[in-house]
Length: 345
Image (tube, rainbow, N blue to C red; front, side):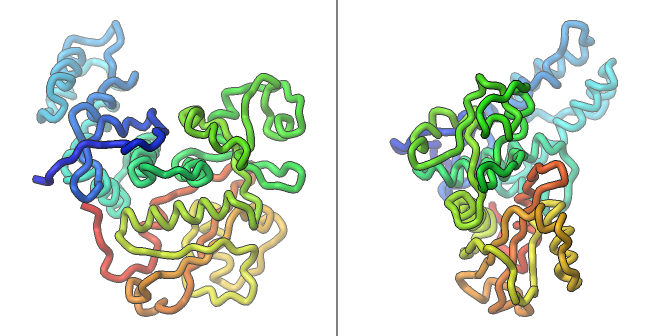
């Protein structure tokens, strides 16, 4: 059994309280260890909390798991539930629970999910990424890195404003309604009362207070701090999950590049990467969808597969036609040409 140490903020400013990191323990290697309290937080979700009309079997199952969230549950116990939706919800939740408690750490459980392409709701996977990033960034004092990390588990709506490419949280925007006044508010479709600011050196200190509101936008214009911060987060993500040190440099364009290997950081980017791989020229529409280009190099060239050793790996991010960026951090973990892949444990 792994030796446990309690999570400690060590005097650093806290952030992302909503991810539940306070409910988890850490082992001696800094990996997250699932606790009963963390499992009970999932049991408290509205999809699993029995409604007033729930049958006795559903109430009994929920009550017993709140008392002991790791106890075995027989298929017959779920089959006995009267409501079909409740049966489906419990089947998904119990499979997810078994995945989490079947590994020594949350990092290992996540890697197993993506490597075996296990089917769990995107909501659950984004929640895992959220808390893994919170662990990885513990003690971080760079608001730009924290805001960039949000992009790995929350879709972003992009717009151009005064020559800048700005990303704002899609869910926050969807819940704010309309009635724009200022230019930025107008471009993002926000009401006049909405408090959304583009992160800058002047307001960076406000990030920790607002971190769970996800209401600060990020400038992703080429050559500026936002894209550089995202590259740094990606490098730390690879190091934390795979144990491999890489350097990631933002690029303004792929000019005369030897396209030996690439990783699309989202569905749209993978399509663009496929086209470039096949020697196709990007049309104007595809070029407009490009959000970020990076060059990744391995600190130790021997970490890379021999066929790409000494060659850069290109990372691509692109928004959809409706200007939404949905990054898939798992692509980095399964798509990099890594030799002797290490597994988080």
